Image: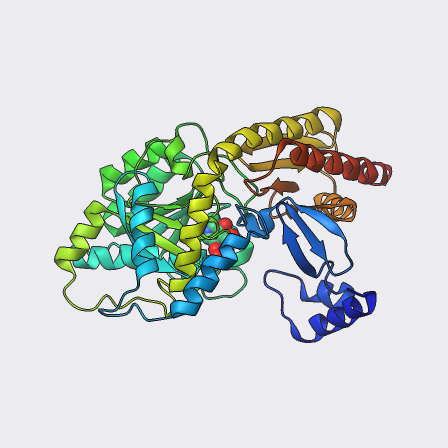
Length: 440
Ligand code: PLP
């Protein structure tokens, strides 16, 4: 590709493309930093021929890596045969049926029935609506409140935004959905909130296992077991948001397996297709599904045009086959240890790096002025480091809502040399920026 084409594309981008979760002002001033044109394995190439490691699996989702031909073939095969048909009412299609059955086998416990969506936000909105509808069917219509955790991210549909604990997302408008409440990651605070609000008014609690967009925040030890007990005690449904953590990211198929507890609903998206098609869903346990079967008499008035999209489902089936065939969950566990070691090394080497953390192939570090005292810089420094790393060949992401963090979520196919390459690039980026910021 020529530089001229990149310049032209950049101008068209500024004129016509409103980017998701981005600064319009920055876009107008700078244009896109990369116009990606190709991907292979853990690498992306942009329109200037600049090759970078995709240290975030793009948006925590390209679990099997880029450029997998079999995925294209799975899409082609289904698109050629039957690209789309409705699943409303009595209609169905084979890939959706097969995928629902496959998911019932790999999901933990008795999460045996699935409602399909096109992504994570729709999955969470669906879970909230199903939970609230469930309590109406059960004769407890006052149970409509949803509790979520501060620093959580659940998406940008109206319900998902309203459940998101990162306040700036909720402050985007002045009118979110009603009946959402937020707690710190404290078991005592959870119980207190339930008592204050009245357990008979609470429909469900939703939580990520590791808060991804909030900064790769790991849960307190034993937290989910205690939360499950409290949910049972008060009859509150427990919804686990595995949109990031599902499909191998943490070294288990689903992160909830680390805690060996059973949610009532589990939301997934991203890794179910590794981003090769848009798909998400909510899995229900047997109790909920059976209750819906016996109590729901009319039409379940909730469904998306693309719920159970045949092409997306066929792509998901191939994706799952690849995850299993290539041992990617085991690889995520092993490479997660290598990544964590690398982050710890950076923490030991640089006084501005602290709080290195990891959980499978999720990782995070915080940037501070001085790791001994924990004193922060006056301005966020992680964006400078991430920008420098991109120049040197590594795409990462910053989290600057509360802390000054850099997060990591590479494809599950990554090997040891590639993890080391990530750490080396980041190391160099920190060296380059550290001098500047400590001087200033
Ligand atoms: N839930 C979690 C934990 C997420 O990280 C995300 C997206 O990053 C979502 C929900 C929203 O998913 P989507 O962007 O596919 O709507």
